[in-house]
Amino acid sequence: QDKSVQVKLVLLGEAAVGKSSIVLRFVSNEFQANKEPTIGAAFLTQKCRLEDRVLRYEIWDTAGQERFHSLAPMYYRNAQAAIVVYDVTKAASLDKAKSWVKELQRQANPNIVIALAGNKVDLVAPSSSSTPATPSSETEDEPDDATATPGEEAEGQNGGDTDDVRQVPTEEAQAYATEAGLLFFETSAKTGDGIVEIFTEIAKKIPIE
Ligand code: GTP
Ligand code: MG
Image (tube, rainbow, N blue to C red):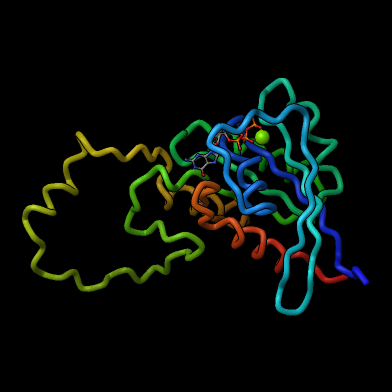
């Protein structure tokens, strides 16, 4: 009956970047504004349908607090997939993500599929090339509408008082992900942006046995 392939997936990343919220969105399509920190780890499952097959994700949602770091190997050992999460409004969380990726590439299953998720995009102003799940092509020279409204332009170049709290430019994270061989998405557990996409794109890269 249930012939779906099981895929063990682990989430890693700094505390409070939204790992549990991403899982809650994917598994229950819900969001909690004040989610409590994970202690140890949490286990959840969810099916993922592709055109030609169904996978069953067995998800280990780890705790990001530093005191739990030493537990992580138990959860990424034998994992076929990992989502390493950072918060686009916190530059230091990308550094932490990079160190998790290094650890995975050294210690985890050599065939592990790793995705990098820049979460909380709902908090930042849309930047010209931040369309989620669409790694923009090089050819971006769309002929600019020659007549930009002076008023609007002033708004764009005034770095002083915008409410954009983004600390990690999309391009920077994308470049890193490409170089490190990772899938890359910007996500919002709050709005659901990019969440199904990330699990679906990972699923497509899991080899059929
Ligand atoms: P640890 O379990 O401690 O490692 O944290 P975590 O990575 O699981 O983060 P968690 O999902 O608990 O989210 C931390 C806080 O950020 C919570 O208050 C969430 O509601 C909030 N949050 C998570 N994702 C998003 C998002 O996409 N947008 C916004 N605005 N808030 C988010
Ligand atoms: Mg958590």
